[in-house]
Image 1 (cartoon, helix red, strand yellow):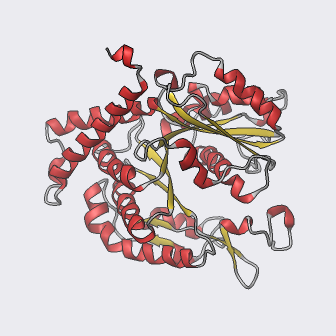
Image 2 (tube, rainbow, N blue to C red):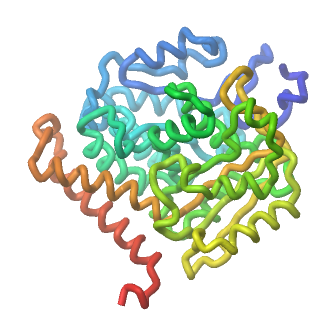
Length: 407
């Protein structure tokens, strides 16, 4: 592997996400954490078990039982120091630590509670290092837990304070993309994960491969975040197409750019047409030239359905990476010559939080399920956090509406 230049052997870019041992083995710079062993055991015994360092697969004996307080204050607190120790060892082996990619879901107790605790501790230990989060939020219709609204609101407070950029994901939205674009009648988590991985791969491609207009990870914060707390992003990816369909289609830069702006392409359930864009980052991969990108963006700017706030008229950051997208052999996605990933900061993301706020209010008004978490300082904290988050998003929506409309 080290001698194979096609996969980046011996290349600094390849070593961004992998460390090389003396025996020439490449080990991911990653830590997997869960409060119960079932899911981590799948990694320990799965196809890629030889890839990961055993110390970087951390699991406890008792889960958080869909309870933020257990994940944050009790069970999670017992394991967080071990997690931080493993992270510190990885960080010490980096020659120029740029930041962290954090993946979690906020509907359950571990992802919300322990996830928040880890973010808070990373902020203390690593100060100004960037934290880019990929956060799965509860879906409007599909629910895995009754107390998702509580967990989500409590976790969102930490995401506001302790991440620099947070990309929102929603299983229901990705299910719909798989059904509609890939003709998968009953998508599995594997189908969903492979689609999300294309977004993450596109975001990090500039760290791993050469390109004409490479976008560094730290540039996302610079170009997408107008104010520190307004850092919740929408994502989309195009083309999402099966091998059968791709055989008959020639997907131009203009076509995939238009597709990325379609509401049905968004990986969170909200409609960008109901809000305004504050900033937008387009990352192209493969056979793409700047001339075609400029033409595609110029066309997008003429569309009335795509509006930018008046205080940010330019709004576009574009990157081109020459490495075409890679797909899992035998997977759902077709191997294509070019693709685009869009990360956008839109006021319409407030729809996600409004839905969660509404569900929180309905339950908390009756104090439903609150008894499960009393005794942890939860009641006062939860209502305060919910009020702060609600006020925050109302301010964002007001900023996107012209003053003459507000009266």
